[in-house]
Image (cartoon, rainbow, N blue to C red; front, side, top):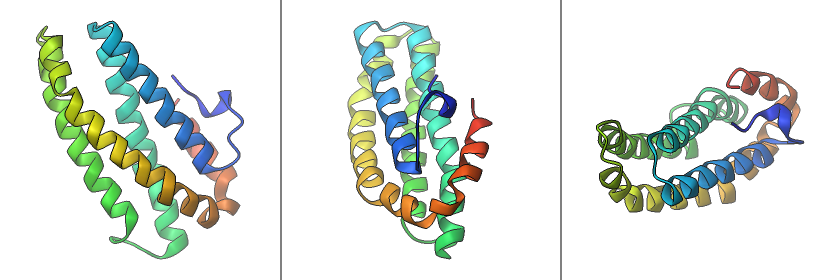
Length: 147
């Protein structure tokens, strides 16, 4: 598991971009060696990533920018919900012993994830770096709670 204490993240974009790469690596491992444990590791990592954004990063951006209930974080939450729905389908298949069926949904998840990550890395994270620069020490502390 990627931990904020194991990296030299100096701002939100470096930490969250690195976490995207970590999830990508776990996906590649799952595709290469489709096991239930590999599925569970990937699922946990991606859900953890969503939770860190939704519980720590997005509220900080919204507070700093005064955009409650609107703006890019609302779009990102909607996309997280879409990806969670695919994860649920994949999880049902994986947990019932059908990893091939689970991976059949992988193309959908991969497409959603790649588009989503491009938006975050190209727009949202740079915005977060500017909007929350003075809060990074506090945000790092909150992110530690996720392991």
